[in-house]
Image (cartoon, rainbow, N blue to C red):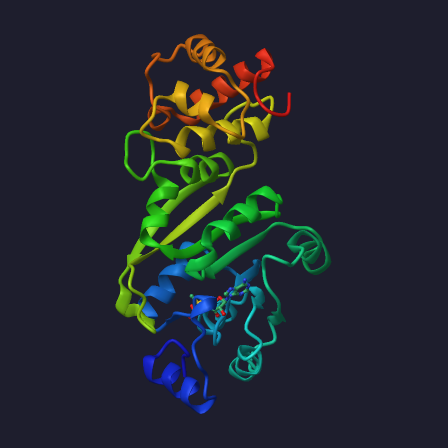
Amino acid sequence: MKLVEPAKTIEIIKENNFAFQKKYGQNFLIDGRVLEKIVDAAQVSPEDFIIEIGPGIGTLTQALCERGAKVLAIEIDKKLIPILEDNLKGYENIEIINDDVMKLDLNRLIEEKNENRPVKIVANLPYYITTPIIMSLFEKNVPMISATLMVQKEVAQRMQAGPGSKAYGALSLAVQYYSVPEITANVPQNCFIPRPNVDSAIIRLNRRNEPPVRTDDEKLLFAVIRAAFCQRRKTLQNALSNSAELSVSKEAAANAIEKAQLPPLVRGEALRLEEFADLANILAKEKTGIGV
Ligand code: SAM
């Protein structure tokens, strides 16, 4: 029987006396159509090596195994390990690791288990740690083709947003620097047990081979972006010169904004990634930013 069936999930929870851990963001999927949507969005095939973050009782893991992919599932909650092992004992293409994904060296693991070939990440992510997990996958340069993730709907919208929208911010730019995001489905609260108090969405992040902009100093680019959105109602000039992370005077900020051919009173929320990159490159040349 499929683990995603609500009656089956409830039976497993009762039989094992399993108590949901709020601190681990445990909301288990109980909707078979949503499950298929995740696996379809990830375009899972028998050639794939998949890393699943947070398998829970193995609901999504089972669907990934059924598609014939090799699956490595990383679960933090040790109480779930015997349950997972029991639920997935019929499959040979699964390995379970009991660890915190934030503490694991995924690059080393991929080298060891998949000869460094790029993997697909698939996960119904715990809400409390969504952004740190995504940013760490990108910043540590984990070899991956794509990450297909269930996340809080607002977070998915922020990742996909462009200039001029309220959802646009530092997360949009960071995600779009490393990948091409695509929301593939919205998921209501009643598809999970326990029911979360926010809606969710499935988003696929297709990893780029190269960043879409040229930057002389990546660290400075992201410091400029963070400064611009830290005080998003302020003009870019004020936001840059008020930033503790950057050491840019008001004059230097005004100068760089002019050189980048931006309006003097522009706000950061109006800038595209290319414009942030130009601005950061100008600041790097003027030697007015950090790390220069
Ligand atoms: N994949 C299951 C499903 O779809 O029903 C469970 C998803 S649930 C939203 C998130 C899972 O991530 C939980 O099983 C939780 O224990 C696990 N988890 C939370 N923090 C984690 C971490 N830092 N590393 C690995 N797993 C984690």
